[in-house]
Image (cartoon, rainbow, N blue to C red; front, top):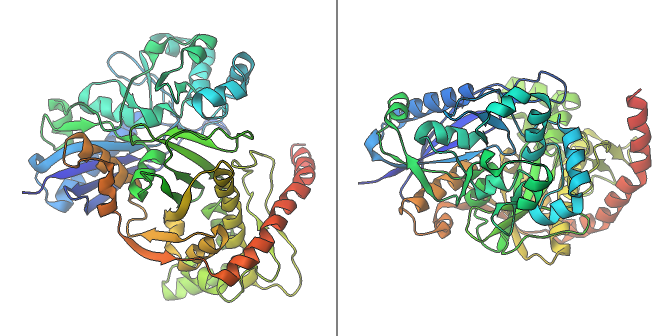
Length: 511
């Protein structure tokens, strides 16, 4: 008789509940959404009760849809959005809405962390820069601005960790989620005494750290009744969404990197040690695989740039999509294929929302460089895909500069659906680009594998080789690669030359 793994992927827009069997095959999935509130322009908050409601709804719908008996579920495991800040009391009751990863309010607290510890030292301890997006600064903001909430706080939790508490009553996190807080000693594997002392934060306010495969408890009677599951079902903590995606994409050992392409995009891979880049272009997570790390670089507007082009420029393709019912992005991709590699000398700078890796410049702007009267809409579309790809190459190059071994890149996320874009990425990267069958479920698969390992259904994370079927493999085209190798330094020079212009435009727009 088959046993099943229930994975909950708690993202920014909602919870995806997914069932996998004991061979790692996808059985069924459902989604239940929730909202993000923006009380002020740089704030982003979510109601924890909405998460729990989404987990209940998605679980019950999944059981109904799959017709799997609750007693056949061997384990529940999680992945979730990272870098949150949810204070709860001793009974696990939320004391305020969760400050999620996208929130930027804690600028003053991040500056104070820099003054007390220093960015270089923080980077060497945690593998990350100092930023208001990380949990340390957000916790400090609560202490500075909501004194009564802070006094009543028993623990500060992440999203998946709160749901794990709702199921088991345990206040825990895993190493991958802990590594995104600016509080975790990446190589020590514990909360950093040096940082906690510098900011006067009691370590008892933080959850207990576990491996991603640890069984942290069993489903309580109350939770089982709400979810429609069986009391006593083992619960494995799983990992943050980035680390879970790494496992689900197959990046569990040295060799392959993976590139997630959604509205934003990142490249990461499994490494036996962190990469401490002199320019701090790279940041590092704890991997879900024990004793491994996940160096990472993230850009702001990857698919977001293509979405912008769809809305603002591709109205003809939009009309065709309305008339035929075809996906507009497939139509845009066909139009782009009418152009040639290099888009007849047109470059696109994909900095529509500033940029993180490798420039870390919030003032950066987007633009087309080299536009001529002879350029067509096909050139504009292709240049956009190429510009995003060349910016991703800068992230890949930062890994290679640190002597990382990367022989191929696995593509996941919605942007990986287009064959043309996959080929452009292979040509720009100079490495094979692989498309697995599961693009949108890679994160859920990573959580499921952690759960399966945790209860002994799988021996170790190498099971992902059997679960990750590669359905397309794009090898670099030598002629196209030669064109991109010629354009790439020009792309870099274009950004560098325009930095003073970006600064001036920022000043003007701030008036």
